[in-house]
Picture (cartoon, rainbow, N blue to C red):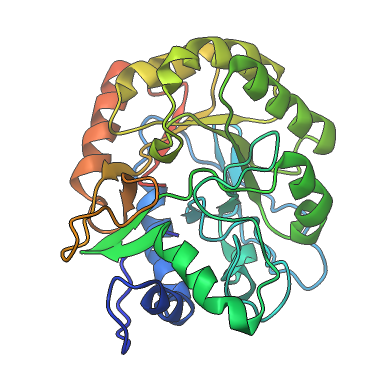
Length: 332
């Protein structure tokens, strides 16, 4: 999730050590705060209560189901992608990797849980896929964290760059373990062929109704790719083939109204508005960028008001409000 941590530690506020200490202590507050932000405002969509789906033994049953243009949520609180990783930690009692706090958050109680953005092949991005660190190697792990994620005023700046284990490994290693969650599977690719293959993979591995939606991330700043060049073809090929509702995640730094019109034309069920805002933070002593990617993506309270409301108004004014769910803001 993406929110400013209120924890204080004995470490430098922007250091990776301070981040890790604050992350576990404030996981619950951060999760609630950013989920509320992402729930956002919904315009022109009829919300109807339906009988809750069957939940596994030991999992809290939802009181009702909210149907937003075919996207079924247990309630209006939806987690944003990234920090909760794949919805489960690799092992218990670890505070690193790509799902560091998932084991301590009651994810089954949320309306939906969005996975990390996953690609066809495993991708380190600007971080690492390693999850077997020894105690003597923790300084190196913290150094990697410090080059991919830092605390800033009223939020965070990150540049993980779609670091993920790949879509097939996600289904093999995590999908069965997270059956009690209402999942939104986030995917991303660098060509229309890749995006079409990702949707086909989800079709093959997931029965209709077993996930809330597929989210197409076409707006990540940290992979340094011109998504606008492939967006129209990608949507036109992938969305009609999907057996699940498709959500398009748009960027505040691009023409998101144009992106939304393409999504509507292709038949997307909803829009994630917005992704993070591109930013830069420099080391005050050296003048060098904090992050490995130089630029990063700012999230949290620093962008949770003006940016998403502006984009929401722009999108809803240019598209037919009854055809899509203009719902989630802001995200990263």
